[in-house]
Image (tube, rainbow, N blue to C red; front, side):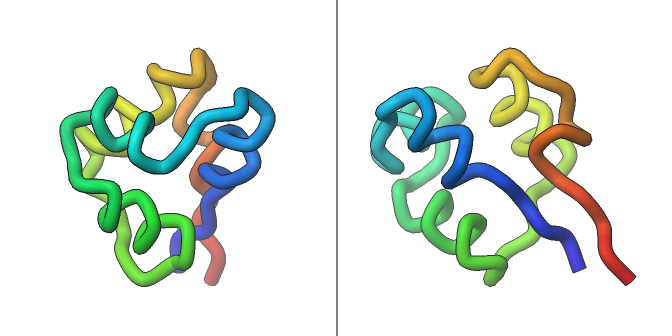
Length: 65
């Protein structure tokens, strides 16, 4: 399972799901599903999200057994 800290990073920047979605080229629902763990991102999407926040992919996404 892939865990993420998207909500935490968004909140620290006062960013709404819709804003992040627009920046990475997906729908707001996709961001919501990612945050709830219902959806695992493609590598390209994970890369783009990390790029928006200026951090490495590993700082946002972790794999748990």
